Every structure is written in structure tokens, then in C-alpha cells.
Length: 136
Image 1 (tube, rainbow, N blue to C red):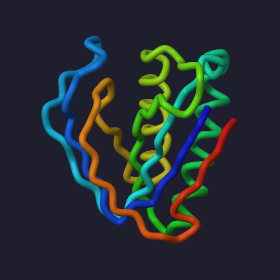
Image 2: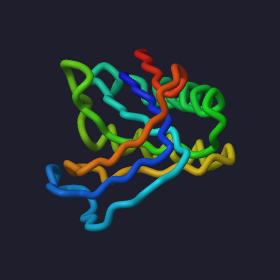
Image 3: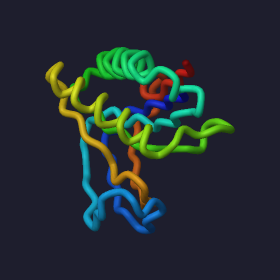
Image 4: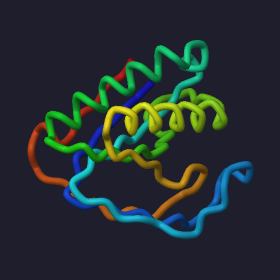
């Protein structure tokens, strides 16, 4: 698992090209303010223990959100941080499980359009805790 977390004053996305036909059709983008955006790359080796990966991801997201004084978290699939990739269905299931756990812990949590290339607009402050990378 590779997890690049960027605290954003503003983050916007607009789906442009669908790359995975088996996932939901989404035409509209969204905008978020004062949110922690998690650029997530699930690796092939992560598939052997979804529960452990889920727990580590939730702990890291909560920790980074707290460091940036936010209760807003956005999950974004970003399969460009490692050499191997988990299967898309595994990654989507992981995202759904993490989102549910974050909401249960009173975080506002959402996902960008899964299976799409997107136009992104990112405004992030130039402070050290605004950019955190974890690998597990």
C-alpha cells in the first residue's frame, strides 16, 4: 500500500475518460474545501489481507487528518506510486470499507470517481504536515 496524503484548501475533480467499464457511470465532478486528499495505490500484495490494510489505512488517514485539523477526507485512486497493482474490484472494495469506517468515526469521507481519469484542481498550503507519504 502506498498512501500519499495532501491537505488541500481546495480540491476539485471532473471525470473525463472512463478507464474501467465495470464501475459506476459518473458524469459530475465535485469540489471540497479544507480536506485531506488521499492518493491511494493498492498493491498486488495487499490483496492477501484486506482487513489489515483497511485498518492501517484508517489509522493513517485519521492521524494525518488530525495533524491538519480537519474531519474531511477524500479517497482518490492513484495507481502510479508502485510497480504492481491490486485488482480494481479489490481496490474499490477497500475504498468502500475505509469510507464506511471513517464515516462511522464521524469523519466526512467521500471518494472521487473510481475508474476514471480526471481533471484535477488542487490548492494546497506550503506547510510540512500538508504532504505526508506512507508505505505499508
